[in-house]
Length: 136
Image (tube, rainbow, N blue to C red; front, side, top):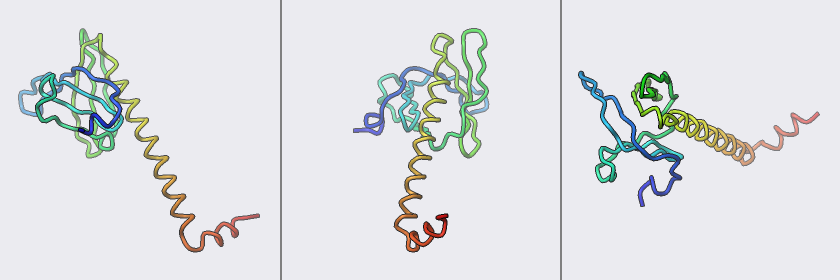
């Protein structure tokens, strides 16, 4: 089973990604957004090796612009790399679904970090003394 099959699929369809080369052509990609990543494939059968963009590496979805028949948006990664996408206007909710998945992922991570900090505090020596020292 692949990671895409294990995680819940939030949206699947086509996006166009601007290439990184000098000419910057738009290339059609089959995309699968899960609760943990955005997966990009060159073919619709997802047989080619896809590129996985983990949500933990995405900082934000930026520069959303609607012009003519396309909605353009940019994904900014944690290392400040910008990846440009566009989708047909009638399928314009890609940017919103990616943003909501990113917020959900960040919330889950914050809760997980908080719980692990709490567990560390509870199991650390001197926890009882610190707790009593804070008591009124």
